[in-house]
Image 1: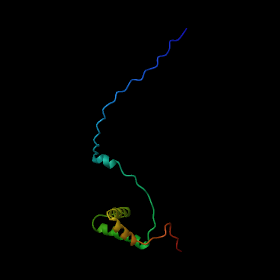
Image 2: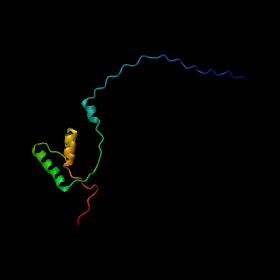
Image 3: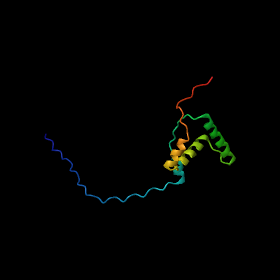
Image 4: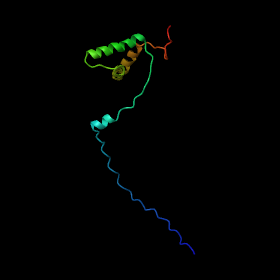
Length: 109
């Protein structure tokens, strides 16, 4: 018994479509924006002891102003202020900061 030849499907010819209109950006609600928290990065650094004590002074000062701040919040605020500086102002500010040896300090006995 002979099997009938198979019919191969013929690809339908596609007609070009008009470009779809650009979608309007979706407006996020406050709850949606709050749900999407930014990814956090953990880091460590070396800082001279006298400059580290300035962080504590700033924490106390912000608490007296009625807006207590954490160390990380103070550092982030400082970075935000540095990003507003011009190139010349940033260069001048960095020139006032002495370089320190990176890594963990030696344990003093």
